[in-house]
Image (cartoon, rainbow, N blue to C red):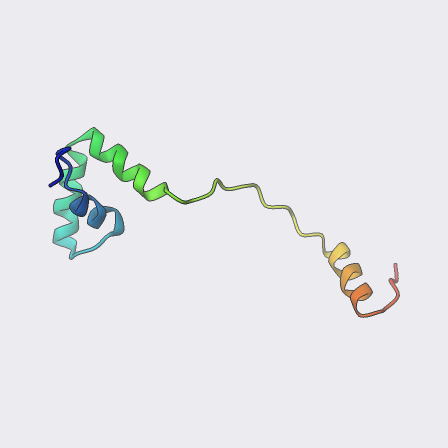
Length: 77
């Protein structure tokens, strides 16, 4: 355990889902017993993830025109 009182290895195992079902149940009970651990686990799960941006709806017509141009074909309406 670190000097800050958090067993980071244990918390990492919980977040990564490492261990048997019994191990995960024990880790889940440990995290659920402390709101600070819950917040840390949530933060650890999201580190490095980008915010989801709304995806643009594909424009099939524009894609077809693009491919036709690349192939040297004339666009037909």
